Length: 313
Ligand SMILES: [Zn+2]
Image 1 (tube, helix red, strand yellow):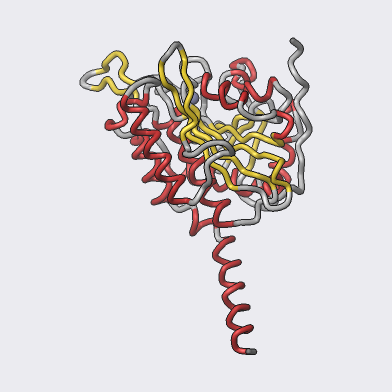
Image 2 (tube, rainbow, N blue to C red):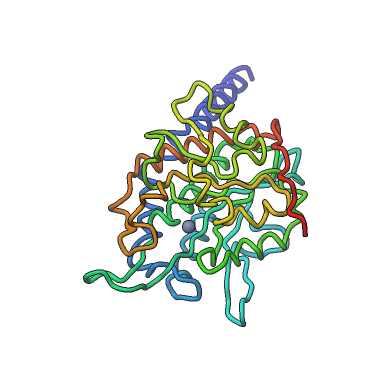
């Protein structure tokens, strides 16, 4: 009997240690495989309504299944399908139910669509969208893997790859109609984390930083670590309104986008040259781990960001 208890205790300690070792859960190999696959020529630039985006959706579904996510309530699979002008669209969404605060939702998102085939530069006409936004989609999947392994989320975590961001944010709009925005405690939208930010290594920025205390909570959770978050340094670009966080933010949700892109000088943005080879994989890896650690008190239900004032109708 004693032996059994001792054995269980050791097993428990081992599980705790392994569950908390982020470096073993989010590895360079794992992140590389995700982003290389999503930005491969086989996905043909993931244009909305194209066969390429269908392949990308199937890949994300398979990853969600391997991680052990559950479909959203009322869904049988991970595809959240809808129509736009009679044509089929689909987000890919999965969840980890919360342990004690299941009605409180935290969202992690990235858009998996991109521009598809565009005007050729030399022999290349595929807009691979490695940074925009295979990098953010990769982060979203890696965070799902991490929190599933951690297994201590008191709140319900939803992981979603949005479609049709590039043509008007229709994926995020449909998604936001399928839940009650008042139930959403925070949204981490991740967009273009493939290259070093203007703040250097181990740093990212948060759009709409001053609109809630979401950013302050993230910064607090990173105290003592090497990663830092900063307010968006490009307010004139209005990035807060240019990604999928904007829909839920307008409904009062502390919904922010995290990015490292130097948007004012990024010559690869929306060109065929936004490819894996142009990215800094260590920047992606560090940013994902930074987000994972910065979100922990929100995931566990300890911190609740202030609401963003609703847009007046
Ligand atoms: Zn984008």
